[in-house]
Image (tube, rainbow, N blue to C red; front, side):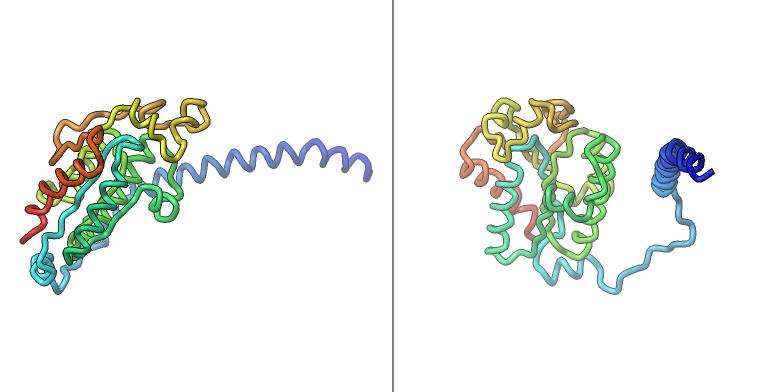
Length: 234
């Protein structure tokens, strides 16, 4: 009897485990879908005791968002870091939000499908808006590959506070630079859904300024600074 039970367990348990995993995966996916479509009816937005305008006046700056969009390796991080450092030295209050940093922490549960990219940008845009409402200047540095994704960010942050900086650099130039070795891995099919290789990048139709990073870093930065400073000053 014991021998028969052992054989039964040997053949039956793997199937039981397999069906358990299938059921759990589907339940988990259903929970995620439900949570994304959940409408909260009992919440009410609270009015803050200090307005955005009052905070802007105290900081002597406009709480705007400078959104950098472009291919990986097009100069987004380089220019946004240079800009934040310069603004900080001028006395402005800033926050730099970087794609890698937020994906390692806030958005570590997301992948790189178009659906997950949308959710990634939605969260960042909501965070950027909260910081802008606090009177802070946010520099958001994200590939943001489609018009739909960029429009989503702008709709959340608000058109009057959203300044899209398009870092225009060709795929060929980005492949030559490849500072993180990502293009090499993507070309070798080691990284799926990589923008510019196996996933599309739609050129923005509307932007505050286009920075051709075929120019030198210094020339690109000077052009950016000249355009953005008047928008920050009250």
